[in-house]
Amino acid sequence: MHDPVYEEAYSGHTIKIFHDPDPESPREWSNLGTLICWHRRYRLGDSHLFESPEAFLRDLAGVSDQSDLSMDQLRERAERKAIILPVFLYDHSGLAMNTIAFHCPWDSGQVGYVYVTFEAVRTEFRVKRGTKTLREKVEDILRAEIVSYDAYLAGRVYGYVIKRDGKEVDACWGFFGDYELDHLILPEGRRAVAEEQGASPPPS
Image (cartoon, rainbow, N blue to C red):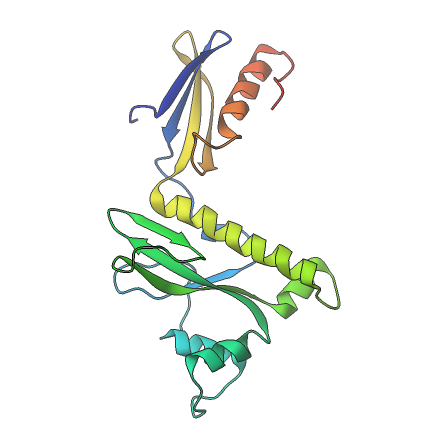
């Protein structure tokens, strides 16, 4: 195991935070959205059979290959059937992904879309019609899915190991995000220490 990225003594125990050596891709989770990407070197997102963004938008919009529509027109028609967000990739000494684009035009660009059909939204939230509030909620969920996938691509996935007197007493893996800013992994480790001692967990 590599050296920990963080270590602290806590209530007679040692909590160490490590990079997760074998994280599960967030795209294996039960996601609301589907992430469709095209890249010459990397296999990104969910599996699909679309040869190009145009083919994807035509299929989603229900437009035949013979129709002479621009990409903007295809996107506009596809948005009548689904909530779609563009996805951008930054490729320089590592990978990063977001839905708002990066400032560097040389090493970044749009790589695909994350989307969910209106039919799937109605089924998931058990509604007959969508609302502006629901749309905003769904868009936030799609963005959060990309945030998790970005952490996975960048290797920002961690776990903790707890030891007492040099012996491992607990461990947990699969925490996504920046461990310095994450308000979950370290409190979770401290709660595990309290539970191991049979005490009340500390407040979050």
